[in-house]
Image 1 (cartoon, rainbow, N blue to C red):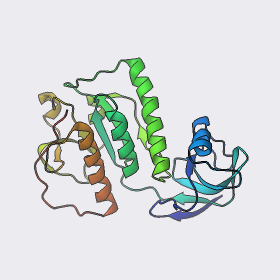
Image 2: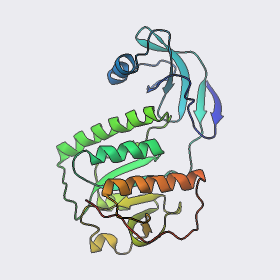
Image 3: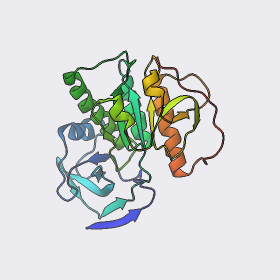
Image 4: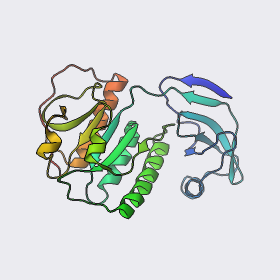
Length: 247
């Protein structure tokens, strides 16, 4: 049975490490999570931890041998609203992992990697499928580290058209309007910038002063949206008309 609902969704930091399970009543740790708790965090028999289902619910537990045992009621964290998301054009190396990690820590709800017209990086179907699994794992680890009871949705690699069809989507672009929650999904373009077809006829938002790498621009977009949603900053102030340089 669910217990109290917390408005801010914070999982207390004094309850031990957080791990995700599918069922809070009959928890079973994934092999990677069990290894992390036992070998990295060194959680021993009888020690405390927190179990979360990735959908906003969590409960205190303790290790009973190799299996976590619930010891408290389920707490339901109220979902933040509106849902916010960031899409980013494919970038080289480990930059997608960095972007997903930081966007998850910030509290972004949906993350969509996509292939743009001028993307230098191209993934075939097999590489895209493997990347989605890898990025979802990065998100899971980042959510546990930052003690978030929600797992973001990390979408499969999309086309630009699919990414741009996200509700409320806007392009990060020079000369855009200030970021606001009326555009709760921000797309960050590739190293070569947006093509004319991608740019034309779509709303643009500016990310602030400076020349940003693609992964940095994605993180900035997420940070601005999260801050606006949390009321940490107020909308309506004029933002500098600068977009990120992708490299």
